Figure 1: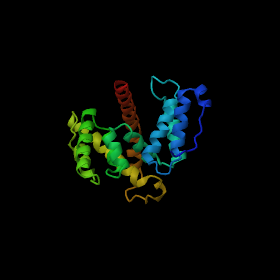
Figure 2: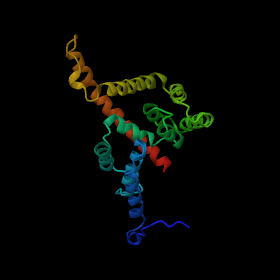
Figure 3: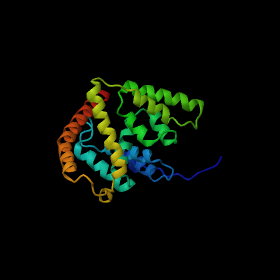
Figure 4: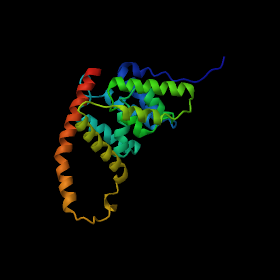
Length: 221
């Protein structure tokens, strides 16, 4: 029988389960083959283990600290950081498809915006496609599911969806490039009016989304 050297950490018995799990996660973070989503998942779990109020979720300050950690330790820009955190709220099939290269990050993140029942349908479709072909790209399948989702209040919802998609595309194109935007041929007054007018609306929409997310998280818990 082959023998292998081991180190028995008797000292961890005294510090408790949280310290043991923390050590295991921190050790896992140094693995070279750990995916970007896996790294984000590990940092989220570490923050959850040490959160101030375990039964009420992360506080605003803890969420901000988590985002700073992802940016500092993993070099994630604001947009990708938000996307990876969104993907972690989707079914495991979606997360696995992203990690295995079957699904693009932006589409995986958008699955998190769907109702739970629709997310489960997407997960089932992904699982069926990948079982048939492990190398299958499921971007089209997920994209169709997202496009097919028609929430109530069509006119308002369509306008809101268009706004979010336009902002998402603009953030991708303009992130870190504000100084490269050419001068406008139409003057600056229209741009200023539009941007200033958008600020209170975006704040209101952001507050609403955060409230809905907290309600959804409470229902899941």
